[in-house]
Image 1 (cartoon, rainbow, N blue to C red):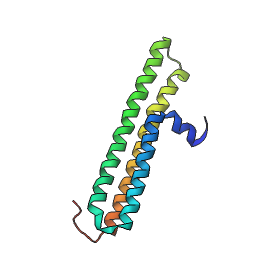
Image 2: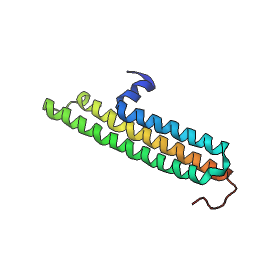
Image 3: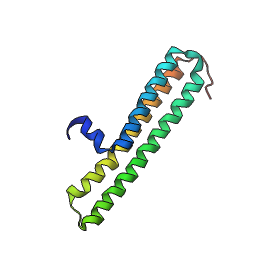
Image 4: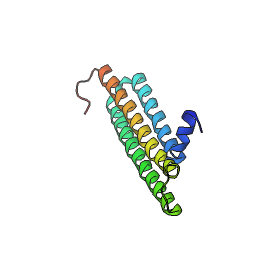
Length: 122
């Protein structure tokens, strides 16, 4: 497959669709934070947890990708680059997407904290 949709599917739909939903949740929380400025503390806390969960979920997808790659090598008995590439794509796409969601959440937190009139959001 080509393009971003192909890369999305290469990461394994279970992991990438979950990460996409987490990305939309972060965006919704960010919009909610700008619409309702009184709830910054709760929104920042939720965005922090969602961001860290996205990273963990991405690395869980990486682990399954590596297991899939090694299972394929064990099944065929020989290591070829094309055989290993399928599992390695899944192993690299999920953490990358998870880190992207985390960074968007962190950027949103920075914007909310900068907009907030409160000094202490802990």
